[in-house]
Length: 68
Image 1 (cartoon, helix red, strand yellow):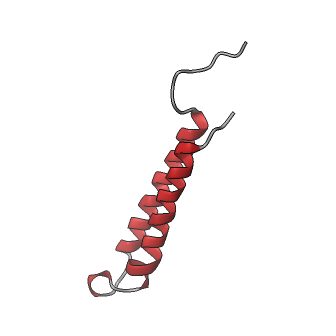
Image 2 (tube, helix red, strand yellow):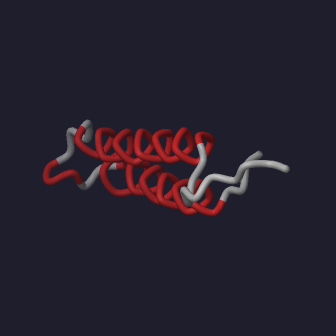
């Protein structure tokens, strides 16, 4: 018989969540690197938000991931 933990997440879920948080912070950091006035350049309006959105999608995956 296998002992099943009562916790909702296992170790792999937490690792994936930490990776997702790092991706989100990287997206916000990339937005701050934009040298255009008020952040209206490519980094502030396009690349950074896409990376942040990917980070949130990755977080969604990390929450619902059923590892071993």
